[in-house]
Image (cartoon, rainbow, N blue to C red; front, top):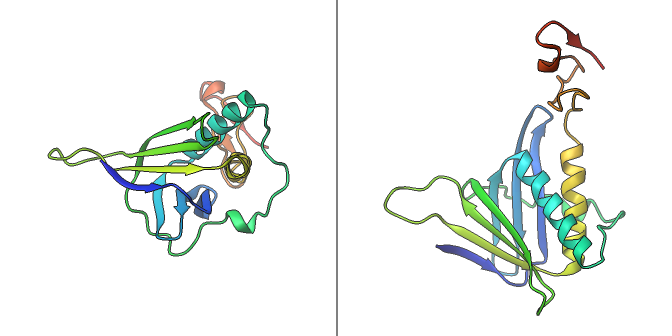
Length: 169
């Protein structure tokens, strides 16, 4: 069930509130009529960036390396409508637009999940792909053996050491 269909957004971003280790992630889109904020997981922001990078590679484009970081920040008020379950990303070759489809995670038994569809241009797709990767990279460093995040002090009990060792940065 489509809740919102943003066909001409001027702002599409992924971001977070909070400190590394205690962050809440969001996807946000805004057009002239509405600001849509949805809560998501860090992995979903990372996956969105990856999907966009792959789509951009198909059309011989790469994410930008410089963009206005402030312009990609979350807009107030950050009040999520619901939590994202699935994310779909596509490219409409006829219009040249990218399409982002976000579907609600949990729904009541008597209704279909809510969906938000956002269509945006190549320039925004390039900035969003690079921004998603930067946002994810601002978190805690990952363990070189298992890939899990380390504690803020850099320490980590790594499952790859079979519980017999504590790795430090």
